[in-house]
Length: 126
Image (tube, rainbow, N blue to C red; front, side, top):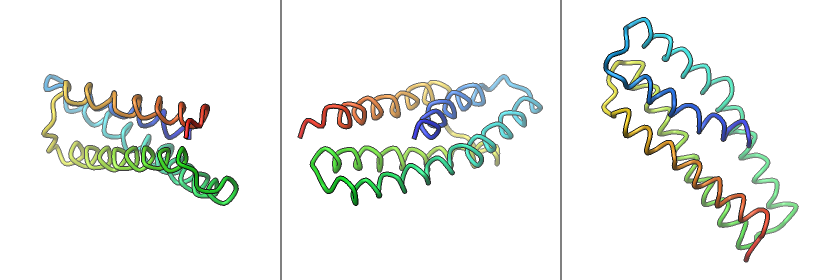
């Protein structure tokens, strides 16, 4: 889960720099390579393991309200994960429509979700 979160936090930071209209073609190609490798080698396998371990928790813990809420946040992070894939493909095809400011703002979404997930896991308030 930590590796997946690191990817969700770092990839949009790469997008911030990649969205800069003043970068060179060579720099853009470097960002494309970095983004693709981060997603394929780190993020997607970590995403898969996170989901498998989360589903196995249902078997060992049972269904509790805190776990359902946690799963909802993980579903939202999963949607964000696939949004990042769409952005990678847009950059790959030189069709990015978002500004660096947009990526700075959306980069905060996984952080907020992570805070709520940690609170739900540690305190199990429900």
